[in-house]
Length: 299
Image (cartoon, rainbow, N blue to C red; front, top):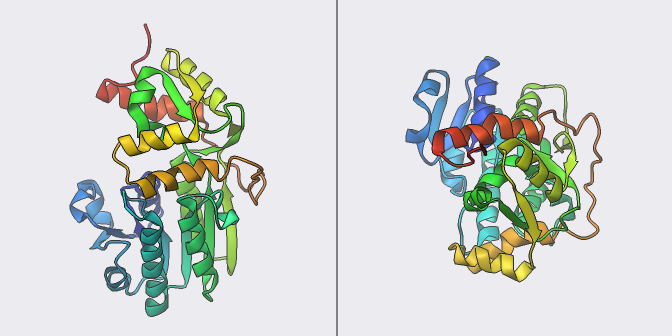
């Protein structure tokens, strides 16, 4: 079986690549930057230069592929949903022209809304497009990545997190490594057919207040969280250099799922994965601090 992996250096992709290698698969890695693939991987993988928003490059790179793990890459953009549409077009063309029979798509909780969830609307559009194909497709609807805590290192270092969500409202949080494990098992399992959704909810739903308490305990210093107004958060995004449409799309991922939203798939043994936030902080967040000087524990 020839399996292609997009964004192989991403939060999920770098774990998935190694899992496939350990399973005996030689994956084809699609990347805009082949030079960034770890040298230790090179004896065990094939690499093709391909931009996921360039349909011609993706079609050329995936000839002979049987299955693909697809990620719509989020990039800083003046028009993010148009970029998602280009990535969708590239995937659909590659599937159609190269006869790719199986797709595992990294989607998100909230894609089931189809509209009104910011950047997630781009993932929903990919789900819809794949739904029109007579192939085997699994949509992985993932919870909020633990690694999103690293997007604002300054706030973590200052001990003050901010959100537009109610501080005590719970939602699914998940370790990217656990998503990679579900993806690997899904790619390697030849028993499933048709179109299916597989939610990946992490070990438990957490509120931002609970997240702050866990960080406080594990990092050994106070971490607090405050709720701020939507417009204040949007302005922070713009001040950080985001184009206005990108700021709206990123903000919409929170505001679009804030009120009266319930994931389509409930938490169950099927949708629950093992790695807790506490474990991730100990193994990855605190470890990064040891190397970078950030996230130092209190005395």
